[in-house]
Length: 74
Image (tube, rainbow, N blue to C red; front, side, top):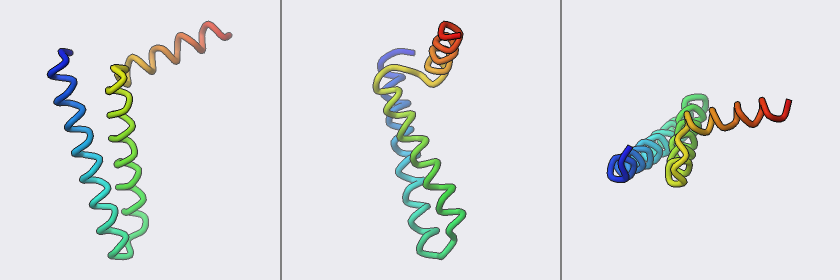
């Protein structure tokens, strides 16, 4: 993935996170608590992916790294 592609993907994750957070707020205002919790979860997920991508650690690479660490520890 090129730097430009990574930056575009990071922007998309931020947009998705902000949209999910906005939706969660609307659902709270409507008294739809479970839907609000779900949208808030996705807001956190998208922002967490943004943080990982900012550090240039893609989720798949992180999972592989964690598996390798678990195998080395056993």
